[in-house]
Length: 120
Image (cartoon, rainbow, N blue to C red; front, side, top):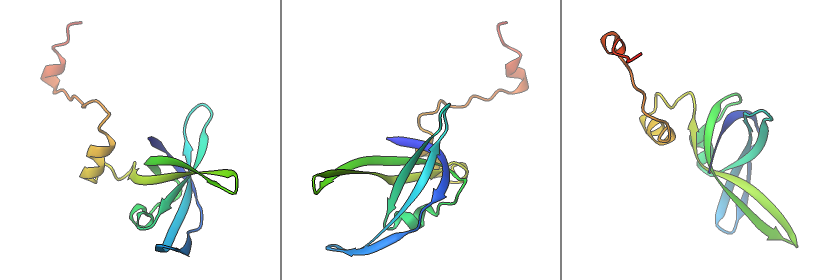
């Protein structure tokens, strides 16, 4: 699943020690534009924090997984990002542009001579 929106807040990075070693997590709030904008808290884990290098007011597309787990008869849900494409850098980064815009139709450009051949 993918969500596209604007980063409106970066929460502080949290780290700790688990059975598999040290872990790091940073959450950010993504505002999804619509008639009634929605805010989603998304978590980045480990090295993805450094790779993303997020800033407030950046437009990003987050590829996410939603996961729930039970602890003491209560359910907790987390939205985890496994890939981020920044809106402003996709034209500079060929791999982001090809993967992030694969659902868009190809752009057709016309020269002046071709545009005069319209049937109406």
